[in-house]
Each structure stands twice: as C-alpha cells, then as structure tokens.
Length: 102
Image 1: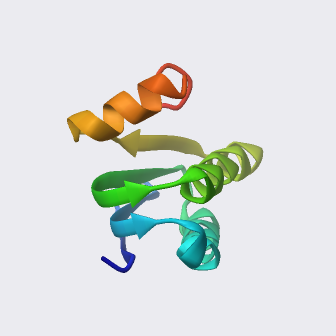
Image 2: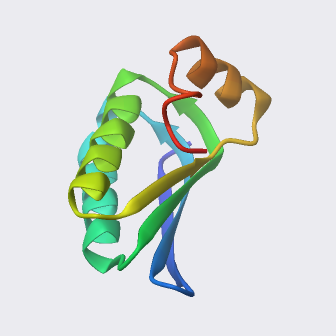
C-alpha cells in the first residue's frame, strides 16, 4: 500500500503524524518532507503513529531516526506509537525499542 500521511495539531503544541502503508526507499523523500513539516509546525513535540504501517525497511527506519534527531536538535520531544506486535518486535530486534521514545 502506498504511504499515506496525515498530520494534525494537538493541544499544547504537539503535532501528531499518522503514517499508513509502506515506509521504504520509494517514499523516503515524502517521509522526510512530512517529518520536516511536523518539526516546523510543532512547538513542543511530535508523536508519530506507526499503527497503520504494513512495511518498513532501513530507509523508513533511517528517516524516522533522522526525524527524532532533528526534533531533539530543535528542542522538541519525539515519541513513536508502536502498538502492532510485529512492529514492536522489529524495533526491539534492532535495539530501538529501548532507545526510541514510545
């Protein structure tokens, strides 16, 4: 499924990004644009939901990690919603579950 990105501003200066579909090399630029827009709009933090993501490769994970770093460099909090067991297992296997705020 192609990537779908929806963004909404929550109370308190938080931007909520909901991602659905595939996060791979084919959509890396779209992902980076979505993350950069969220960073520009957010006043306090960003929450990224991966609940609708059905596939993620190293490009998608790389874009997510770069966004986390950029958010922190801009003084923003960053958190990822990982409710799918297979996504949690993937992030755990990569050693990111304990590193990436979720």
